[in-house]
Amino acid sequence: MISVQNIDKVYRSATDNYVALEKVNLQVQEHEFLAIMGPSGSGKTTLLSIMGLIDKPTQGKVLIDGVDTSYMKERESLLVRKNKIGYIFQDFNLISELSVFENVELPLLYSDISPKERAHRVEYALQNAGIFHKRKHLPSQLSGGQQQRVAIARAIVNDPLILLADEPTGNLDSASAGDILNLLSQFNDNGKTIVMVTHCDRASMLANRIVHLFDGHLVSKAYMTTK
Image (cartoon, rainbow, N blue to C red):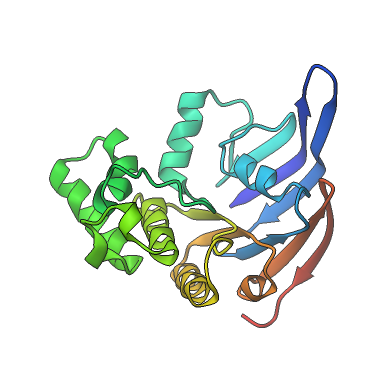
């Protein structure tokens, strides 16, 4: 489903170069639940953003569902993201002036579908994320766990093949975190491929497999038997 091949990522400035990732190779299988772990600054979020076509590698290739995205123009990358990838941000990235419904609807506004179909998809995503009853609320009227559910609904509204989650429980209390992890596990059981960046051992226990990053290098792989 995702193939990362010899990825380097270097951030350049006038005075220095910072190597965020170096020679990273990683294969993610269809329907897998993969956890990426490592200390702060190890390159986890950088790797996830490259897998999600939000950022580009300095060198190397990223294949999504067999398609080489390495030399795609931005418009082509946007189509792949829209049709195949849902991205869940740690800090929710909700627009404060829009209702829950309108936040989830945003990815569909760039699609050639009718308002009636948009509404149907948004309602379905909100129901699946367990937040339909808050559809008329503003983000400021929600708890952190509820905001994350809205962010998840927005990520699944296009029914993507892949969900990428960047520390999805990082800003939540333990009870809300447990709810979000159970929700992600359900999506995986229903066929979604999930890649989750986390520093939480509890979260990683839901994964089929864990990979560890350290200073931009993939340093270990551990296969889970608990799920």
